[in-house]
Length: 166
Image (cartoon, rainbow, N blue to C red; front, side, top):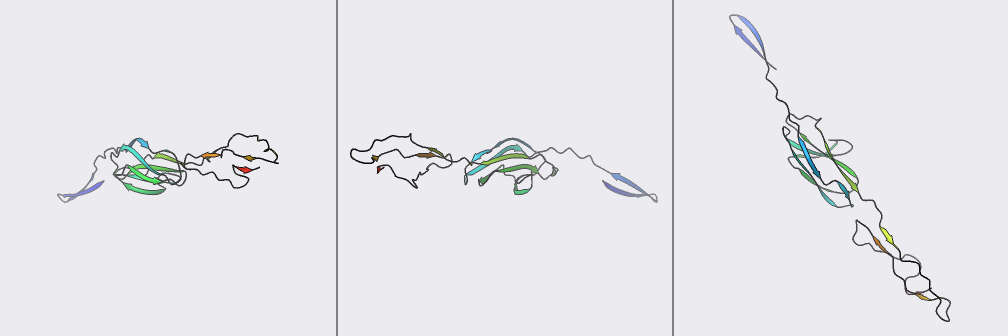
């Protein structure tokens, strides 16, 4: 509110001048991409689709709540992260007439903690070799699969390997 003093005919008049404040249009986020489960060290791009309206920039943050640990304030609608843990990212429009209470959008990232799946061959029965107290036994090695690692190596750490005399 502005105050204006007018001196007219020896009298002082005080006029209060106000102007109508227009409504502030909050930013709008209509879509997010990137939420999901990822492997340690994987690079992921988090993206939003939306309009700032009366806000001036997007704020990307992480932590327990919106705006706690600010990553970036900019007009950028995407950020690239390296997955190291399960974490929640937040994005909201800020600046202009938009206050700190602007609605935040969450994008959740989960670290894959699933162990590899080990596949063991079926049990086998082998008779002793003729005249021996045992037999040379050939068997299939176990295999393993992991959704975060294309090459899983299975290593025999004790016991006899395939082709040994049992």
